Amino acid sequence: MTHISPEDLKVLLEKEEVFLLDVREPDEHADYNIGGILIPLSEILLQYQQVPANRTVVVYCKKGIRSQIAIQRLQEKFGFSNLVNLRGGMDAWKKEDI
Image 1 (cartoon, rainbow, N blue to C red):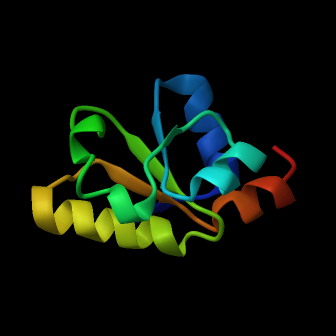
Image 2 (spheres, one colour; image 1 turned 60 degrees about the vertical axis):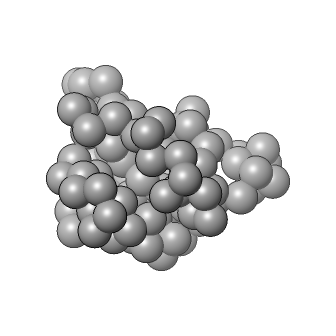
């Protein structure tokens, strides 16, 4: 599994169009988000068609654990190879004050 730090994601967002996928719950997303599409982990296999296969997709959650689970499920079930986990999730993003 590929991981990206918050700092590297900030740089990447300036260089290319990245698809951001938030796998947290709706209330977490409403409280704070960085512009990603919301598909909670519990719905990820049902809504996988919303995840593009032809560009970089950075998956994130609060701490980086649910996003890893989402990536594993999408890779195993549908063969995605373009998914990147945001290391430390939104907690790390906020800590870096990005």
